[in-house]
Image (cartoon, rainbow, N blue to C red; front, side, top):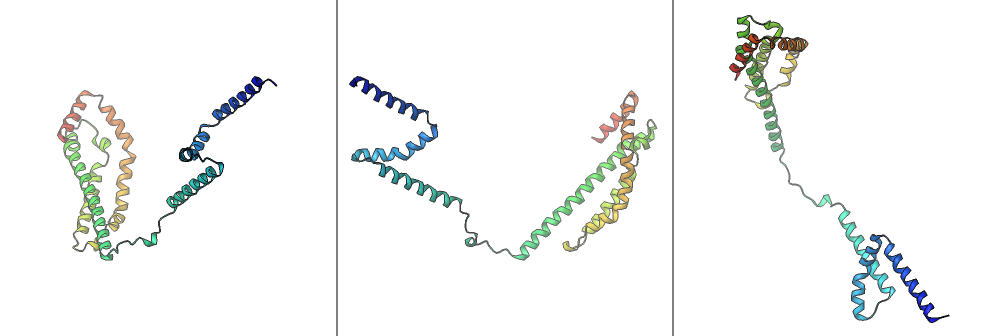
Length: 221
């Protein structure tokens, strides 16, 4: 065989190997470099590179990585964590303080609602009733009765909070006792809500009535 042809065949084989290596997935080539780069750099200086060294280094790296991963994934030993002892009396006081804030919010909400109702009746309902330009009962239904029930509920809430012993303040019973009255007035109010809304839209088409509405709205501000 011609030596030139033999040399050409060897070159073709080497070329095929290079192409195959390049065509391998990038992550595989990266892992191979990660396993061997440091080893090759160290052992090249010694003039000592062999397969046994590469395998041992690779296994050592893998073992070290597995140990670190296991360490990170292991949950901490909770038995060694000592939580500070909490005084039962302190827990009770915290709960009572939280309860007092909830009661305060309930009372304040009802107070604000009653204030808005009274303002609306004084500045809107009563002036329109005196003018007799709209059907006030149809437009506002039983708002005045709702106001009376709200005032009675707020009064009872204030009475309950007057007890000097915070633990003796009972709010739930007040709402249970007021349940029937609240249901009665709000059933009527909600039942006529759509009809009242239609009446309002109809009245707003009349310039004179719309002016009265504007006057009432400015009074509310």
